[in-house]
Length: 174
Image (cartoon, rainbow, N blue to C red; front, top):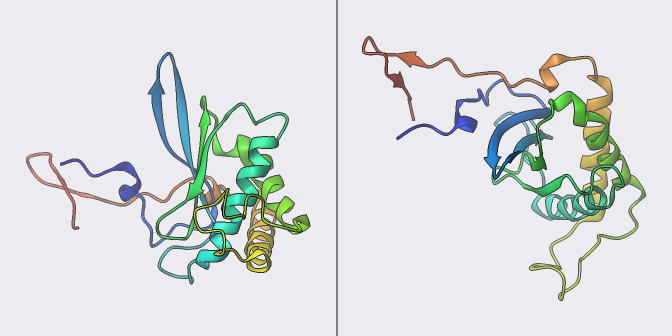
């Protein structure tokens, strides 16, 4: 069985940033998945679940209402490891091309006075939100992105080195 692409990323060296994850053909076009990584995996505490849920709601609302990008947004949702989010857009762009969009979306969290859609009718677990912590994590990410804007490491995954057998097969250790 082939190892999925995201497991070939060296999670011991990844830093917060905006990364190309994969591109998939859809009909006559394509969609691209981006890894919006807020935390360094396995080196920092993960994002609190209630704050992650609030960030999901606030940023999704921002993205789906952005006048330039709203028709390009396919999906925004949390990673299972709670270190970031996945963004799926129509078409194909380099991570650097969506930097301003992501920065603006996370800046918008600071002015949120409520979590959109946090009602029993609109949300599957409407009591699990933490706006104050969402603001904390968003501000931390904005500061990091701004401070590392010229750093290629926030746009390009560190790749895992994989052993190749003499028969040419890749060796996966887990």
